[in-house]
Length: 219
Length: 160
Image (cartoon, rainbow over all chains, first blue to last red; front, side, top):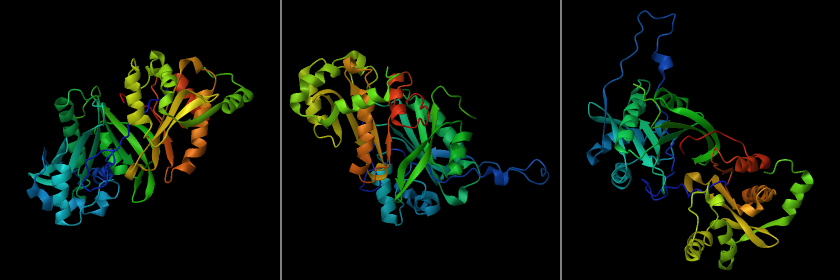
């Protein structure tokens, strides 16, 4: 028989209202078709190297950097997270949502946060499953940064959470950039989930991706 | 299990069944399927061995639930059907679950119950646009129920 799954809503939120369980991945980079040389124009066109990225916890002192993407509608529009338009909102987000979060990391270039990435275990007894979400400041799109961060993070999370078997992520059907991030990081596309989530009062279809502990990590 | 049922048989099943909220005095009927390993096999809960545990579950989960119904044949509960409704960003979707005493399998009862739910829940719940159900890949009978009612198979979620 179909199994009644417990309610998926999650309690932690940067705002008083409940967070969606699936942090919809934001509009992130991978505009490689812009930077990758076409076969007939190899000369003089070199792909920019991906900068060294590190993942670390976010601190209160990172609030100004956090605001750069949290206040940007171009970044936030595909997510279910609330934008932070003031410093107070951003500080509140750090204290009440980010700090207590089970696994939240700033994506850093030269130790400065340019985005974030998080894993949340599925609720109830479903500890074998976790949700992935990420965001990147608009100015950093198109350079492979998010893909590099996701690859690093996925490798790390399966080591840190040995009971974990499945990481899943959803991306808006129109968010091709974010879908490309997941595909390049080795996620498998499983399904289009129709009318899955409400973003700014519109009901959206999403694509579900997963990465299993047994799937090959992508270098 | 329900293969080869004629339209007439389907209609008969639909006429036979009704949905209603549970009351605590249903506990003995509830126990019939809740204590059955064949039934709990694909469910997220463990077989009940103790009536007090079941009463607790009924008091804490079933009775206060926004959408949990007994599937009744001749007015007696023979199974249950529920929809867990989302809130906030998830308010457009609800998750369907159902369970039926094994003695009643193969008669189109769950199919009829799911049809009743799908026919009414979108009008009852404002903002609901999607009812979804998750079924074990090996539970073909349950998959058949959903296909017959007109659910779309969207994909397989691995190691879910």
